[in-house]
Length: 375
Image 1 (cartoon, rainbow, N blue to C red):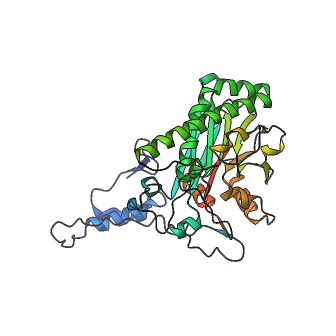
Image 2: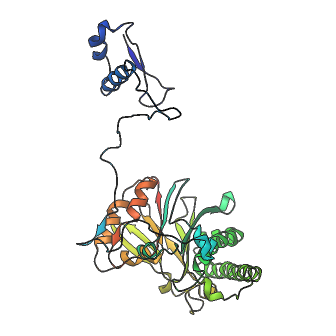
Image 3: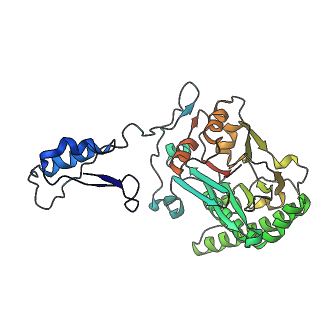
């Protein structure tokens, strides 16, 4: 009787030399590795059982050991003495019969991730507690993609937060992040050169050019849509903020580009503390008007963001940047502990952590984090 690990059968699979009969079971079990004895005994006992009669046409249930017992995440953590008053789970949602098909099919949660070169990305967009309670759709949106040619390639991370009072802001945020990726791809080589040269003025001009193109394309699309549906078009109905982070996939380039319109933005986690990168204070402001697209395309803020190995970058809407910036450090410390390690969490862990709740912060929440391997 012998056993050996099978490399082809996958981790935890064993080739077992079973006895020809049941006369030597004690000696046989003594040869098995830990954890296999119980499974082997269960499988033998079940093999000797007579199956219970089943109703005609009914599948027999499969019984397996409860390997996941005790590791369910449950309700997301909360910061503070008491959890928020809102229920912690999605409730009602819009109906197609309400007349807004886009809202009706917008998921309450988006989860995404990527591994590109030395960089690992985790991203989640979650409907806020207040929207869950009201049964309205998630107005945030996000996009993760790669732009540029191989020698000037960048990760593009974009988040947008539809203005709450705008009727179709969920449409505006969704389309803004995707169109921005297309327009910035056209300017990718110039942006990459500006990053390498650390030319913030050039970077700001390129950001303005791209976002202006996005704003005009968004308006044209919305006008056509309104015409087809025989309704009045108003730009303000689609108002949304927008934040874009460009990360060169070549780890030798340490600068990143940040383009921003409106609330939210970028935080950097360094030595256990979050630092807000506010491009509005950098002195490179084209013009300040309404801080939302499509009107504010001429008030794009652009910043060069130098980074060091070991730092974690967080791009988010104000649903997460506001509680991160509050005077009570509980929320910030909680996420710093969760995301401050050298390795990125699993997708499911990241989602659970991103849903950490805090009273008075019930808006949609979109967050994208970037870890760098070997940092």
